[in-house]
Image (cartoon, rainbow, N blue to C red; front, top):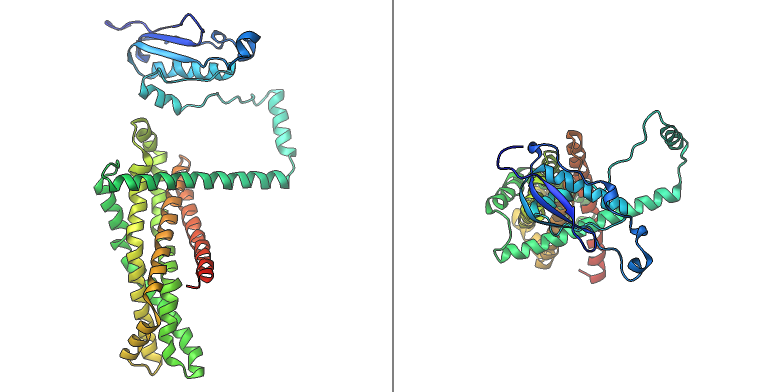
Length: 398
């Protein structure tokens, strides 16, 4: 033992027998650390009826006021105590521990994985049962339903914490760096202008071409401007821009956070007391919420330009006539409706992509899986949410 290092000791405090008193320096390099045997705690069912009837047994708690220096040696001892408490059926109360040690302990499971040896009878029976297990439709449907509900709950919690963080950001109390927000806005906004321009221009041109072919039969060439303007403002521009952002930005968010998960950077942020939802998720979601409405308006303008080019080239329409027809057909309320949809799409893409990244595995392959899932969920979610908005618009007669 190094000079100036006090030996690590523990004892059970007299009284209820559920408080562990820790003293000394718990340093792993100082030598073997004391262990916490499971026999040190009686089972909760072994309590006398008189003690067990009025209230549940006292949790296992700690008095760490006598601890000097500590490192992973203390965490290893606490993990032994945590598993012993779980085996005895007792609750584990980390309130008396150093905050950093309690956070590190929270990353460890309550129990060790009990794996049967490969050559044992239990291992052989487990392998035979797994091989002969039949598909149960009810069990499959139930597990899928529980998984969907659990994922919906996780996304709802993440959305709620993000909204709370946004409120604190407005008040200047959020733990979010302005440089992170500016970088996310630059990546989600100006860097996406080229692909948004190409997609919306082609969509507007396709709408004008299809409309011209049909409306020419009825000598209604002028109404191509109405078709292109309303289709872009109400549906196509918001949806196509959201799909582009789901594939471009949503996948990037999921891949970035999944990479941090694999490098244990998320665990490091959690241990140091930094709220991941405010530090990582909030800048990404706010960047999409800020940029998506402007990208939607820009997409409408570029799409109308594409329709204008096709209409002028195919039909006998003047530029001023096309412009006047578009202004008369597309009202301000249509832009407000599309503006609201773009904000909803931004929230959907940002929250789901970050959630998929946070729940990803820790291998390199899981990064690609997370990015793929984020793109698929984002695109399908945008189309499904657009259908909901279409029903709302029909009910409200918008």
